[in-house]
Image 1: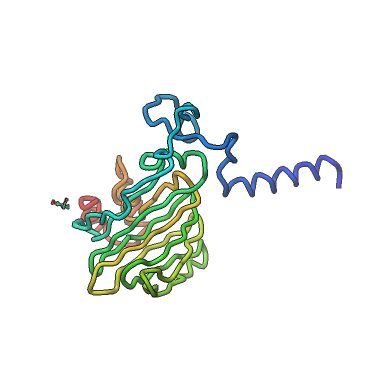
Image 2 (image 1 turned 30 degrees about the vertical axis):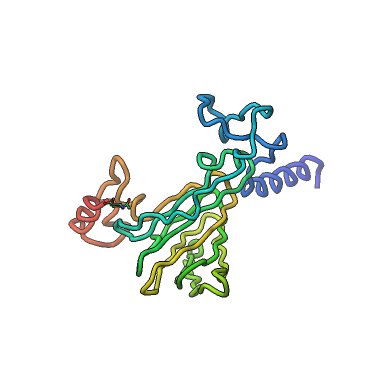
Length: 220
Ligand SMILES: *[C@@H]1O[C@H](CO)[C@@H](O)[C@H](O)[C@H]1NC(C)=O
């Protein structure tokens, strides 16, 4: 191999690795200055001399999310808005509450792997491998002793969901490997796009009548 080919191979593999990790911090921390209008990759930093312990703390995760909605689940985020100190650190957290039989509908996080643990209830969770196999990997997760339950990981980018299969409320805590994981909810992206994706395209993609597509587009 010529030096050039070796160099290109090294560069390609370096970029392949970087594609799944956030840029490494260039300082101890970069507490989000949410009032700044500067647009950067992340949020602009507060003056480090003005940073306080509170910037690294969020005390709202004990509050149950309001599950009175169509899917009967609610995600409470802990992102840079709620916890300014996590800005640039490549990590975030959520609490998810599920009413009985509630669903966190199929969605993917373009920038994060998610690891989740059950605090309350019983959930059936799953993710689908990429094309062409589209294999569903699914498991029932339980709360265990002292409200610390089973743990499940959803690989970056893959479509996944959770379903409360109990008669009571369920709650999980999940950590995500990005400060800004992003969420693409399949139904919303397909039927709720603004402006809409043409119903001809969706009827063809989902192999259904256009009238059904129209009905779904009205809902989303
Ligand atoms: C929960 O959300 C529903 C629907 O938006 C609303 O009517 C209700 O007042 C909310 N409940 C609380 C406790 O905020």
